[in-house]
Length: 354
Image (cartoon, rainbow, N blue to C red; front, side, top):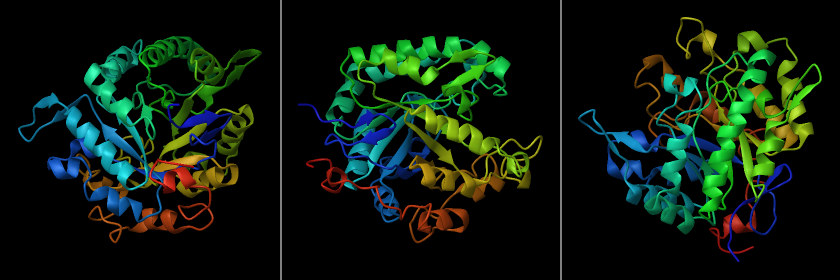
């Protein structure tokens, strides 16, 4: 019998049926120029010291080399980065970032089929099946268009969104990919409401429709909580939307949780205007036993925006270098990485036995 992680109701479970509460970090491996750093030989060891049980691996169909040219990513390195994550008893959540923020994604989800073709490519497929005992596949990071998350825009975009992802799910399942598939929400991942939407009697239950299209019902829905603190302070809609998702009973995760990164008008997303009430989201996740993944271990967020050095959880990529908001949330015993339920016997055994 094949072993793979399974979604049962609203919970991610190991092959033995034991629930796993995701607590982890994102790491931009594909952008590392050093080959050893790109496959995380030492980085995973440092991340594991935090108590994380998963790493959302930033990967791509292509990568920018030292000359600034885009070249195909290495499937051998994809195999290695997944292997190294597993060796440190953390779940590899591997995703593709090639068109994140690309305006080409604004119409018809045109790039989603390209992402899907990568996953089902024979050499890539061999790697995925080799590691099917442990992996989660994030089909496409923020491949859905930007919107204002209004009822009108959701009503307009969701039918096409559903059709595009049904095609992707069906194609990946048809070649024997059984691992959980992670699907990012609309509005560059920021929409949680899009997975279960009701407006004046019209109901579009995206999560239900996609789960019905998946013969394994093995889907995780992902939102990225870059909601400006200046807009959420004193408001209850954060809890309202979150609690509705919990009531609807599908499996979801806050896949990018950070203190910064929100819409900031014409200022940097890492300015005061771009601050996120990250503890509020972490506490909601803890209360409802929902997973979250922090953005981002670091270093590298400062590459295009020096102020965004504040998004790096560590100063140097080591556990000893944890600082500020990253250190606080990792060490919290109430809503951080120290809560129970993160490791089942299956994870502790290195994805071998119950």
